[in-house]
Image 1 (cartoon, rainbow, N blue to C red):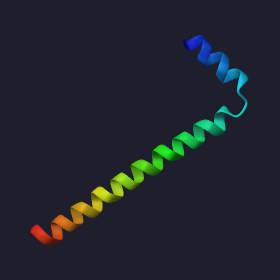
Image 2 (image 1 turned 60 degrees about the vertical axis):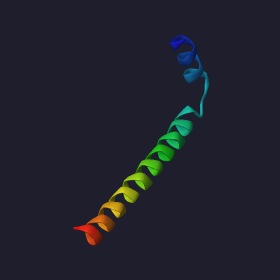
Image 3 (image 1 turned 45 degrees about the vertical axis):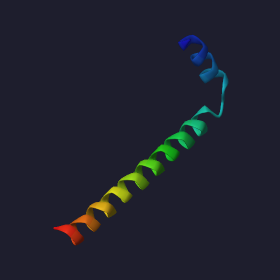
Image 4 (image 1 turned 180 degrees about the horizontal axis):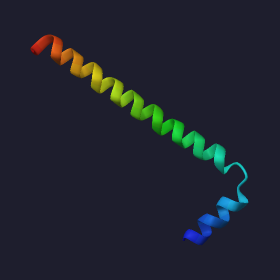
Length: 49
């Protein structure tokens, strides 16, 4: 399985772009998640504490 992946990795020229795209997607999702969490925490702090 890993040898197939390595062969694909070497043959595919735009793999770095794909990786960057995937990483940016993950980062944006995490960023949105953490942003929502912090906003939620601020909301709770203002209203209940």
